[in-house]
Amino acid sequence: MENIFTDEYFMKKALQEAQTAFEQGEIPVGAVIVIDNRVIARSHNLTEMLNDVTAHAEMQAITASANFLGGKYLKGCTLYVTLEPCQMCAGALYWSQISKIVYGASDENRGYKTIGGKLHPKTEVVSGVMENECASLMKEFFKRKR
Image 1: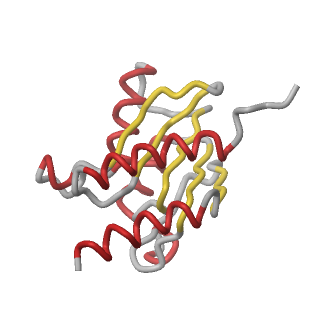
Image 2 (image 1 turned 90 degrees about the vertical axis):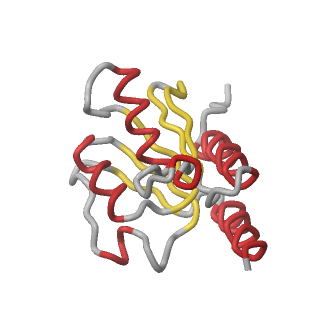
Image 3 (image 1 turned 30 degrees about the vertical axis):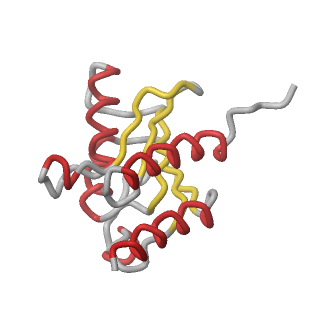
């Protein structure tokens, strides 16, 4: 029997969150956090609505997951996010000790790799999952803004 719970399966859920952000005029980044093939948090950027520069999709998902699990560590969890995390989010993910991060599009200007952010040494990273779909939503958003 084929496992339907692939990285693409969960990235599609993150893309749904990014689409919601897009429709709300937020930068279209979406995230889900999964443990044992179960989504325990869904989020998207809320920086405009909350007037809060820290209200990134990843930050919202980290908080929701910690509340769900009843603890601050996200061991055994995987974050699926449509855009490479920024330095701030990478720092929070470091402290959460999340086991795996899967992201779609790279952020060559503000991504944690460009800026020199670090993740926990035990965190596995997979990049480029549904990269074109993730990047095209971002490009469309900024095209409409200009």
